[in-house]
Picture 1 (cartoon, rainbow, N blue to C red):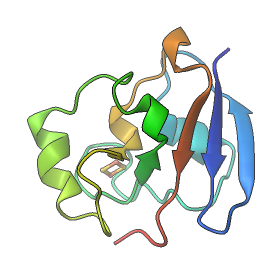
Picture 2 (cartoon, rainbow, N blue to C red; picture 1 turned 30 degrees about the horizontal axis):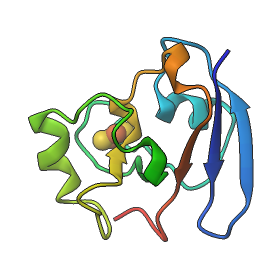
Picture 3 (cartoon, rainbow, N blue to C red; picture 1 turned 30 degrees about the vertical axis):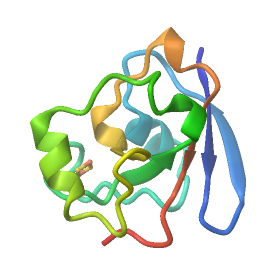
Length: 107
Ligand code: FES
């Protein structure tokens, strides 16, 4: 199972096995990791599942679609390269080792 490291804004790290087919958001939610709120439940309609992906991963993840790009405008301090909405990242084996950092706050 792919391992994903979630790093809270405080620096607290959580390394979690996330099943293929779940989203990165669901991996955090199912393990009660603070910092990803996911108010809309994964419908790409709230931006409260925003994270910064580790620089090494920016080009290794599937590209953002237009809906994710638009919704990221509403996130807290989005970064043009590193910001992603975790509900739009469906986990595959290729996600093993992914590192994501939570923003200071969601919206
Ligand atoms: Fe609402 Fe991702 S959970 S946009």
